[in-house]
Length: 243
Image (cartoon, rainbow, N blue to C red; front, top):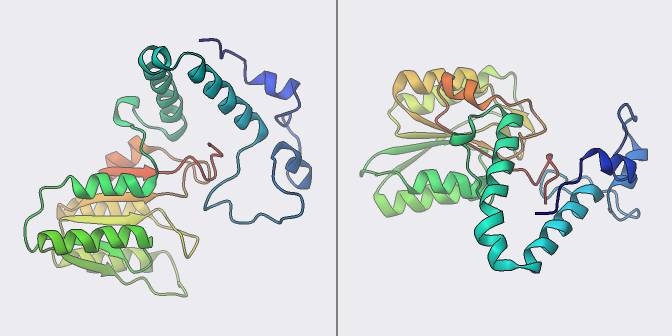
């Protein structure tokens, strides 16, 4: 494998900012964004820096040079190395971290793998991501489940209102609770520690949809697991600027 460039080479190439370079418009040159567009929706599909796009092109070229050898001999180890680097960044044990297509696919993988019984409940917020709500409703129809919404008021008075809404929702009995680490429509961070403790005390499996969290919030996933978070799924294509 001949992709061994030091990340510092990107600085020498002018593709990465130097340490201490101020934030602001000057950083725009490190992206290929259309200068005529004010791109504000980085939270949906984040743009990749030029340095990342160049590295992606190098990997693609290596794959196309000898596809079978790449898939059989190079890719498995490369994925393990990428997993280890990401695990260190988000504070996770590498063996507990796997790659999925996106955060919604991760939530689907968890919810669809449960051995559901008729009458059990899935709790999620009234402001939960619509695709996750659709999954819960589909499973409810398929298995005869109840979907219970934690009614989080808006405007929000304080973070305690989020905790109170979830505590009320799981108090009637729940198998799984899905919690948004950052609510997509609200841009509000959830106090996971308090909700995790409440779920653990009630024997409720806690799945966190952390779509917007990697690189936006400091993450220590092993610490969250110790508090009671059973599964955590996030995206690298938003604030982490991955392809």
